[in-house]
Length: 311
Image (cartoon, rainbow, N blue to C red; front, side):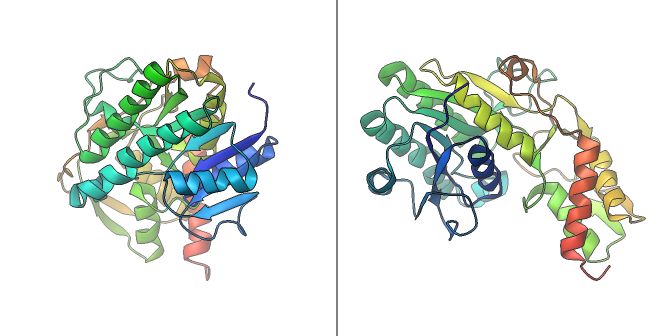
């Protein structure tokens, strides 16, 4: 196990970033944050800079609080939709920012271990389920392509410059404070009183839902595996849950009697099924712990309390 020291979390202001910071702090790490927002007062951080990932901000963090021994890189594009409407911005946030980080680590913190939060979107519509890390990269959306480019850049810096890195391809993350994707959309609609809900697709599409606490734990655990070979791990449960079943879990958490129907429309860039094989990750101690049904219902109940406080 990597000895606790000073860690940097990029994108610390995001929902997953919050959980990663708290997980690191609970394990004895002193944590620096880089991102957008006023996180110093909300999180157990010893240092914070509100800004972009560039050499100036990274060096400023190091001068003020020390050079990190570990970096968990969460900053970048976060979903398919924005990458389709603003692809250049998504490229800059994901690919260009990551290369700036790798180059800074090469020059200023060459022994640091770096974990990258990538995405199952790099697989596209995989031919076989569950998807193993050996499956080819075949992204569909700009978001998926940019995550694949980020991975390739890390592999380049590992092979040519000895960057100690590991990649975690997160599948469908959900949980408290994560305000995006299907789970949050359903919570919002149910809180507004909708009880006859039409969703896209057929309802048979499958996702591998990973609780946000498990996502944070997997990312932190991957530090132990970082090396110039840049190993890849799936951040997943190995359990495929249909969109129809997901919707029912959320309705159960709200205690709502809901009629769901599906319009058959498919959003461009979305794979039909994304279910990962967790075997390689499990052998490295990166196993998920929260059962999907338990986590979904708990997430919906918490959202109901926040969105419908008068209930």
